[in-house]
Length: 408
Image (cartoon, rainbow, N blue to C red; front, side, top):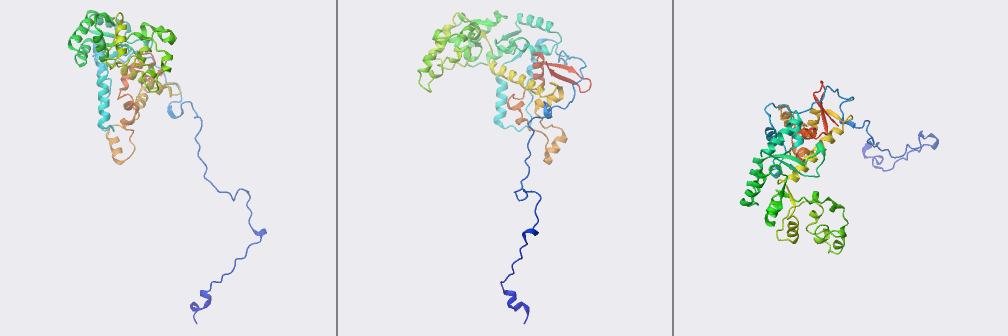
């Protein structure tokens, strides 16, 4: 009989394995051998080895071969008028073709640029000239001749870091007034005639205009209320002791219904605190009272879009200084600072395009950088001149890596 048909092949009887005596078992040298093993967790260091971490590429201070007093490199800029036109022309960089912007974002960037006033700060002009004394004398002569107009917004810094003191060409102001659809032509002609009669004046007498015309100019942005500077004591007055038209009472706010306009101080809360907002309701009670209060005062001359323009300059200055502060010695070469301001975007050379075609990393898209998301493409040269003219940074030659900047 073959073995494959025997019962031993189909039998399910199995032999029990002989268990080893306990004394013959291998014992581990560690009592933790039977525990579950886990991979070690990689923890990041709580403190970097250096104050700047990997942001600093230089282990020692840069060599100082002498300060650079001015950024004036273009010999064609011979006067202040040409400098103002040059600064306004090179304030923003052109939109890159393959920057990752959609049509909505492109429209936002272009509309924001068009809404800014045609002004240049005085500190920026000084950064592009050789002699501050000669520049101030020329600005004074051009202002007296009616070619320039000086605009001053108080409370926007002191000394060289003042961003509220700017210059604008009279021709640009006239063009801006002509494009204002909210201002009547007769009112625009009267306003421009008053400005031409007093080229050095920075305010306008409200007694020469009616309340409706003052409101019309305020809406268009050509006049602002001087309440923030004419009566600074109002900001420190006890609320219940002031007039109802000037200071908001706390007791009236506490009795107002939740969610109503009176619960936040009323329609004129911004003006009561010394600020300025857009007056949109022509038939409102507060607008009529506010205009009547300024019948015997002087209204500050301004340009539409001055508020966003000042906020853009202030934030751009702070951001550039913060980039320099990341360095160990608070100084870095200009080329490295420019690269950080641009955000490490991809280049347009053939090598970068080939890397992008192969799917390799070739830099960050411009649309994802702060330069385009927050500053709408503000150029590096513009911000550098702003900080240099304001005295926030110093520019010096190194002799090895070109020009460098440091925080004062």
